Length: 284
Ligand code: ADP
Ligand code: MG
Image 1: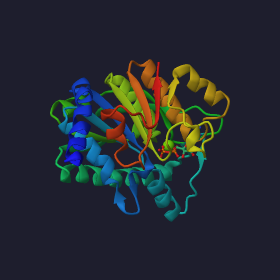
Image 2: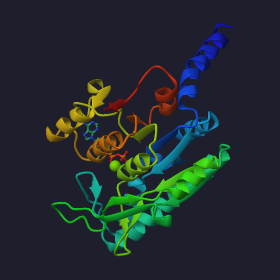
Image 3: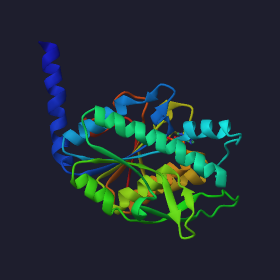
């Protein structure tokens, strides 16, 4: 009996959040760990289906780090990263496309198995993501920075209660295909759609003072805190694009950004539907 009452308490605790986020857009970026050796992580996708049935409008943007690196090594290319971004030559871009497309199909298939409607697309479709070559001290090759977002198709999908599943490629004015960091793409889509929330799911608890020590997790950071942490070098490598993606989203009108550990079972549900924050939240 006690057990049963506990369960009802958990459900009731979610009610204010369900009300608050009803029909609201939440953009979720899922890192490379979305698909590992054993296939897609169903628990994260279950959370997204839950959100969808609770009346929210989730949009999923995914990366493909480990699988891309695996495909590249198979083709004899050694993966290289500079400040969290992947060096991408002409040959790599096709490998990246293939790896991301395969992950995308697996995610869409699983969302459908879990009972939701989902549709997979890349940023190259219908001008969704337009880019220019990213400026950087070292030439990164075909790595783009987002110049514009045409979210017409994405808007239509969520209106029809279909979960958009997007992978981060964009087209340049030169008609070339560019690889874009998925954090950037997710942030730009969140901004274009004035999302209520922007959530980055990754492989660490959030932003930490010492990246190897979860007890140094920052629970809440402001936009100006983040700039300081980047300058000091506390935020480095793959966390740099994430930090800026959050800042960009907040400056663009998104209410709140979250960085969470996808490895915590049902991290999304815990963060969104309960009183406890479990990662780093970024506010104005
Ligand atoms: P994803 O595939 O989710 O984009 P990344 O590897 O690109 O993952 O980025 C996450 C990584 O950022 C972490 O695994 C960690 O090594 C690194 N990182 C750098 N600085 C920090 C920090 N201050 N706090 C937490 N993680 C950090
Ligand atoms: Mg990354």
